Image (cartoon, rainbow, N blue to C red; front, side):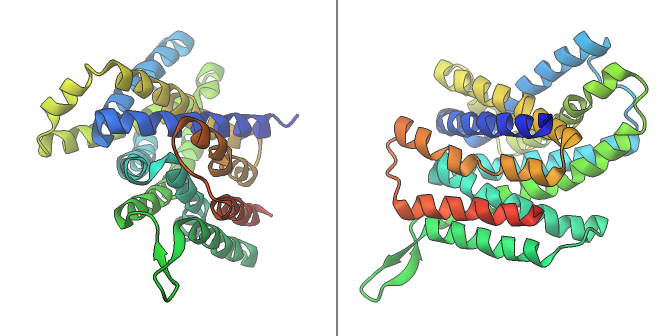
Amino acid sequence: MYKGELISLAVTLLWTVTAMAAEVASKRLSPLGLNVIRMLMSLALLAILQWVVCGSPWPQDADGETWLWLSLSGFVGYVLGDYCLFNSYLLIGSRFGQLFMTLAPAAAAIFGFLLLGEQMSLLAILGMLITMLGIGLSVLSKGGEHHTLSLKLPLKGVLFGIGAGLGQGVGLVLSKVGMTHYETLITTPEALSLMPFSSTFMRAVTGLLGFSLVMIFTGKTRRILSATRDRRGMTFALIATLTGPFLGVSLSLMATLYTSTGIAQTIMAMTPVFILLPSWYFFPQRITPLEILGAVISVAGVTLFFV
């Protein structure tokens, strides 16, 4: 009873830890370095898990179409989405970075309509507007003698935050397509029980390839290799990996197997509210009542998608 809802709540807590650990690790290892290291760690952990349970480190029964959809999901969600997310942590902090992730359900709804023909209700459209209002309350302030609205955050950080939310939402739709197809091919109960983890593995393969290419073409290979000597940075990278792509992402996919995607997404979208108190405690960040109100309104807007 309420298994999917409890898993979704656990994911929210895991992603709160992920966001804070990733903020520290991004500053010490660089966003690109953290992404490469995180993909390597998650692939190793997922391969070991699959080998122990199924006897093979490689996903069983997956065909070319499964790999295609989940690889596309990995490219959009990891290579584009997480690259934007970790850069937003660097520029505006994990608290505001997670706030922009409330755009993910809106992106998923729009892309689901375009790709899958899923209908959007008037409440969903209203939810998008309310979510954007909540974000606006948190990131805009009155400035100047004429009291015009202005961004109180770096524009580049805001754009990275928007890109992260869009990548998360579109990546989720692509994952759903891939997992729906993959489920019809699985022949053993062990492989079925690990389907969310196997799907995450396939997404992470693409993530590692994509980030490695960026690392090579930007000439940052040596710099990233030297960053691995930073013990504190590597410790926080491991925490971000365990709570992120290994457990967090896999459990988020698992939650949709036990409850509706809408309920799962609504609960998991509460991270911007959950992160307020630990951000205030662990980081020297002042939180205004308007920012709290904005975060709550954004999450309230997300709930309208699934009423």
